[in-house]
Image 1 (cartoon, rainbow, N blue to C red):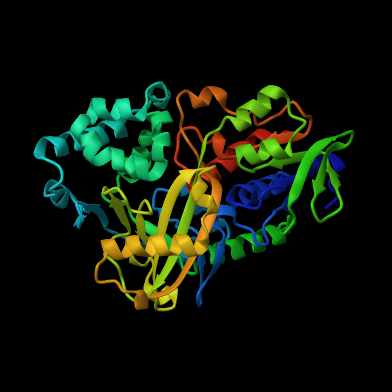
Image 2: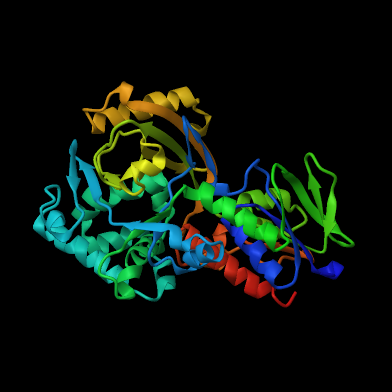
Length: 438
């Protein structure tokens, strides 16, 4: 196929956003090359070796209502391989583990009184019916939750959860943050389903990324991993991409999908306002431990932590979702700790984190012993999710920049949703539609 030179595009970033966008651009008749800095594609969805097991570096779940991502899975031939299950949710409070997996268990939840529970249920129901999310950008998440749930419920239930996800950045976060979470949980019910099912692909994201890369190759998209970019600069022919370990190359059109602060460092020819908008996006980072075990933990996919003093901010027991038979017979848990992008915790050694996290795990599950842990590995990512700060939609970085041929598409452009693969695919589809005529 003879493609005009002006139809040559480069996509910087081989995460799910960049890969989906590259496939969409290719189907518009453009020649596309994807450059990924890491040795493997996938970004936050990448995989790694955990003892004898190859699995996802971070925890992910697919909801039955994630129609955009499911369409991608169908496109690459995996949608029919999905397994769907129901899971349980727990809370660790007052040194005890409680199940709140259904309405009856929630009503029996001892840390909250009857009035507290009623106001909490009202808040969730009310939030699920709000459609004008921009109004929620004007009020802090604390003010809105106190108004709806009351101060007592806020301090006993909401505040520990906010701190577990946002740390003290919750003070800078708008009510739109909690609204997006409620909306995602209620998506299935709006489509008529009685319960939300959680799904996964056998083999995890290793299988998904393998098939995605195969599809891209079949359709003529070149993917080059292990190729870090140092800058994207103006050039008479478009954008000159300067790489750390590869000769520079000029493309008429370039889309940078890196997180906003990283995009600002790469694209120094942007004007002052554009750079200010990119640098002004507030991100949370993550330290996430993967723990491989020879026994189950508490049987909850998500265990929310209401007690303070623990070294991590939640327990995700992946083997309640994925059958141990698909995990080599092992049980897998993730221990995330969400922190600001510049938090000193990023400088802790793996050994320090492992010691702290194991102590916390043994505190929650007293029957667990060192011998039950088969492997332990720590992932660090500084820029994971942009925060819904007050009026953040008014300061969104531009997609089409002041530099001809240079475009920005990243998680900061997800304005009315949570950061998950389904929202990422929707963002790629929206951007591709914007680029179709170019």
